[in-house]
Length: 116
Image 1: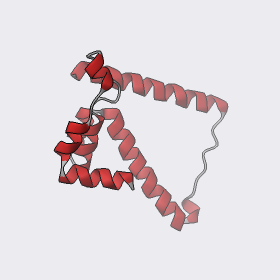
Image 2: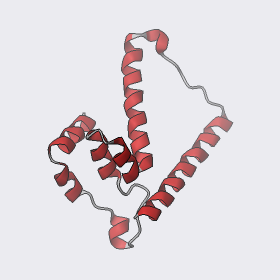
Image 3: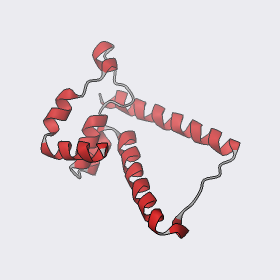
Image 4: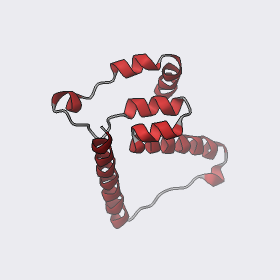
């Protein structure tokens, strides 16, 4: 529900969202945080401007797209039970997934530092 409200506000009054978005790390220390540009990325995504969203914050854009696709899959799997899948990850796979998330976060932060 919050995502729908955000998307509606982004389409109606994106300037209000941009004025209310503040990064404490950037304002205090002067460097971008890993999520800097996330609000702008979400607004551009709501406007249907994928390249602009990816430029603003690649990681948050991909997470938002993945989350949206996951929600569509969950709704579809509710009505078509044979589409349901369960992830049974080994300890090694969970550890590798955690490292991948950390690596993606670090890469995104490097991107943010290079463009801001």
